[in-house]
Amino acid sequence: MTAAGIARLAGVGRAAVSNWRRRHPDFPRPVGGTGTSPAFALAEVEEWLRRHGKLAEVPLRERVWQHLAGHPAGPVTALLHTGWALLLIHDRPTLWLDVSDGPDERLAALLPEKLKEAVATRPGPATAPGGTPGPAPALTPPTAPRLLPSAPLLRGAAELAAELGARQTFEFLLGRHLDANPRQYTLTPGGLAGLMAGLAASAGPPRTVLDPACGTGALLRAVTHHPGQQLYAQDASADLTALTALRLAL
Image 1: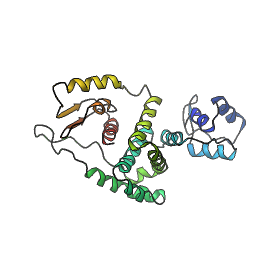
Image 2: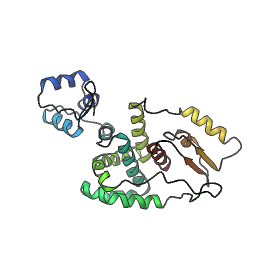
Image 3: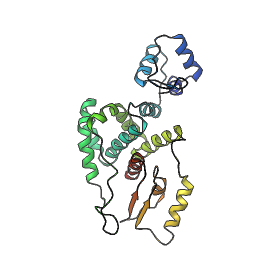
Image 4: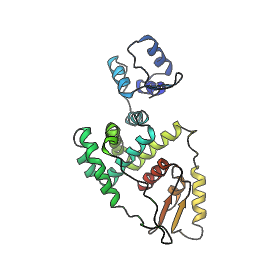
């Protein structure tokens, strides 16, 4: 997490964080980032703030976001893991309650198989239009070792989903990530996506919609869904394709 994130956690300005770093030799050392924009481990920062009585009451949204932004495998991996958990919460909430009941190791061990089961029940074409072999699935559940560092994040996201809903929780976290990294993504504005979707449906609801450069899925999200309709997404980035698939699934 950044100095700005620490400031939000503590309810202070960034100047106060810089002052703490100078005055307190036990302040957590950076674990990444650059000299001008260092990154710190969330757990170490929370422990230091708590020990010094500086930890503010952190809103749930902010706490979940900080877990995601500070994930050891990076925020995109964290988003994908969160999306998977939210998909299970959305489709099979009682199953989520079962797998999340216990230590993090149990959650990480049980979740992959349950995710495979959830995806298997969703309809999907085996072949593409015209009888050609169908596209490779964009959603492949993560393994238990990869999920284990995400367990605290997934539990927090589940709490947030109880307030906002699974879909709204994913949209909030994805939107926050996109806002924090504006130079990494070329986004289709919602109004333009709606216009393109409307033009595609001007002669009637399209049976098949393909976005050959889906990005984060804005165009496909704008399509008014109809029974029997098939949506296809592809992108040079496998991560973006997976994020789009999760957005559509939720």
